[in-house]
Length: 317
Image (cartoon, rainbow, N blue to C red; front, side, top):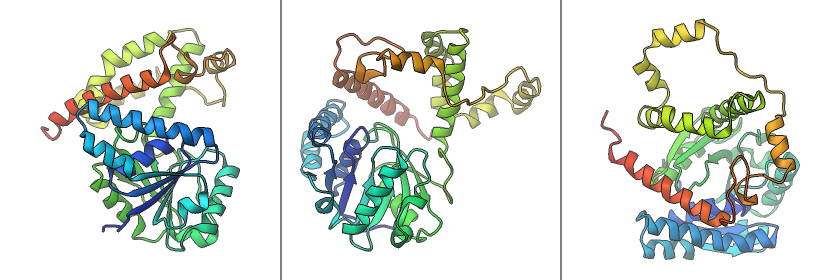
């Protein structure tokens, strides 16, 4: 089914929020963007403009489409004004239950009764945080950064979500050219995030144990995994390897997954030293004096080039 959605509100204008406003603007929706932090809200304008410039440079959209997308986005300084006419409210605030609960309560106070509330939560069960009156129109729509390039969006209903909501969101985002994955219930971490969580634990275990450096891990992924995963996916890759060989590898029990203790010395050392990632100028790698905006732009351009390459032979098999 198709949801007739034209008016969208995005609550939270940070890393994901500004990008989700752009996704919906590119989709032709009239989109309001709100954040309680005026600095974050002001920065969102520049970030959206920079992302549009990158998409134009890559040939993904035209100059006119970039202008049109930005014209569809209105920055507002009041949550009430953002949601009061909203047909879809996209929640993209920090992953803290108390903050999300307060935001949902404020949305409930000002949004029309029929408004769909879609949370971008990465791992929280948001449904206990949503007011009872909004349970039937609440859902999860979880995106991956940067969502104006990465097409996967995880769609999950809550216990009381009306049956037409998830198919409607799926149809809407397919119209945007996205790739929705529908769950019939909330699966913590969905698929991609669960796989990333397991990969994170293993990579950090190898560093904490002193077996390898960060560069060794990325080298192995770049030259051993990425091409096959990009072309085949993982489950099909197992078919090509041979399932008997996969079974034999598991039966040998030479690999034991790391225990999740809730902490890792590698991350603790880096964060305490102020090396928190690209935005701080360093993390596992040093980024020198290169501005974070330039690093993100270069990443986006490479992603777009690689995406175009993958799309050029998609469906050959």
